[in-house]
Image 1 (cartoon, rainbow, N blue to C red):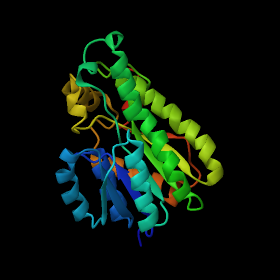
Image 2 (tube, rainbow, N blue to C red):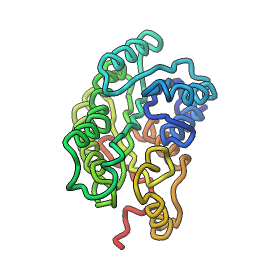
Image 3 (cartoon, helix red, strand yellow):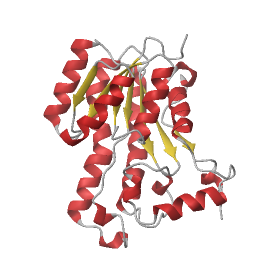
Image 4 (cartoon, rainbow, N blue to C red):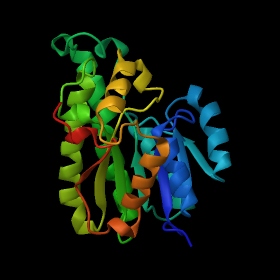
Length: 256
């Protein structure tokens, strides 16, 4: 018996086998969840489908979380195929590469708007559509954030501001959806070598700093994040909502 037997989970954010979303999907599957995958663009489909097949997933659909029509179509399919939804994983973030270097002062209006739309509003938009399928099922919505939301991380810039807005959105969503018995939480993951992270200037130095200063003296793994996601997705965390859980080898507690 798995902790998530009979649960249905929708995954956003898989780009390849190094993605945080993939690590979480594997962990949810191991505990018995049935998984549906999405891919944000055609060039990602060939990467996502083999991974989905390895999980026995029968639902693999396109969904650009900035496109209302694609989101509507996806959730209509889920309603038809599954009837309901128990777990939504939002692991979506994007900023233009030029915004992830230099000074935050130089952030462009278009770059700011794009980062907020993709990285923050997408959680709200997906939650709107997931809510009707989750009501009465003790649903769990999980998103991924980072310490750059509360501390200045070199070159993280507009993504740090975006993660701060994302964490505020988690709390406001949790405050409203609690009446529908839907929980909303975030995992603040330490730096890990994902496709997105490698676009941040100086990312290797961030990894080195965590390894030297974190209480556990190591960087985290996809398995670390996956285990925490299972907890948030399962009834073990039935009394928790609006929380930010740090999975970063304890780096967040250190002053210097």
